[in-house]
Image (cartoon, rainbow, N blue to C red; front, side, top):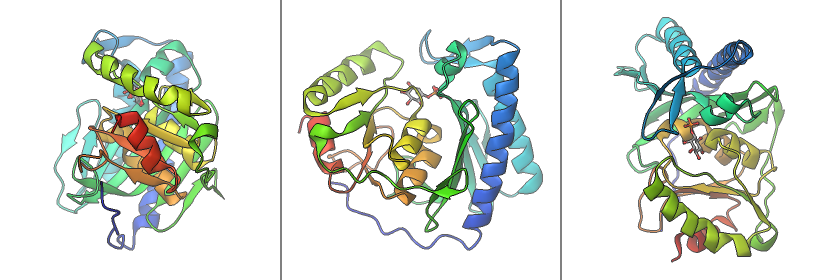
Length: 278
Ligand code: LIP
């Protein structure tokens, strides 16, 4: 059981970092929407033939990284499309330049830019980092979600909270699936355990957006196995600051690639137990 954590107080500039993340996310979101209108080209595939990266992913990451390097040259940066810069300030930016890349390719309106300012915290998440400020922007819906530690979560400037639902049988649960056959066989078993027990399942194709939908009360819970830090860094903070409990695996590993589950405190443990088959 992952012990609840009492995170240390965020640096005083967490709110300023969140404002900066929001501005950057909106700028990059406008860029990817404009590039989408010009057509999409797959630049390469990654873990499998269906795990793709587009030229827009790479351009979005380039623009975000350039802005961070100018504004905060001592910070580190980790990006999904290959950026890896060590910093000296204690802040590392974790970027998903387009989360929901397959939706972007198919022009489905569930893709976003996710940007988080993180600090080292070995026990918080599986990657050893914890976001203290973050922003997720979906250019198709015009939604900007922003949070900083201790500051709550806003959607387009208005405070939002999770639904608070604790009854699984009437809960709408979001999840996602990986890009390899081996991982999908495991995930199929997980969702088959859950489907008879929940109101319904939604697979929207973007972990960051799923976590924002949880924060806004449009999903009652979310779980996934196999997420990368850039998939969840900002979204997990946005969900937690809106009232969600974020849990890792029952084997004690912190939330992240092994397993991440988010819901109201009265629902998350039961959801995790059913999905993991414990
Ligand atoms: C996606 C995640 C999603 C997961 C997909 C994919 P990407 O990230 O946000 O939750 O189910 O398989 O990993 O690849 O679009 O950045």
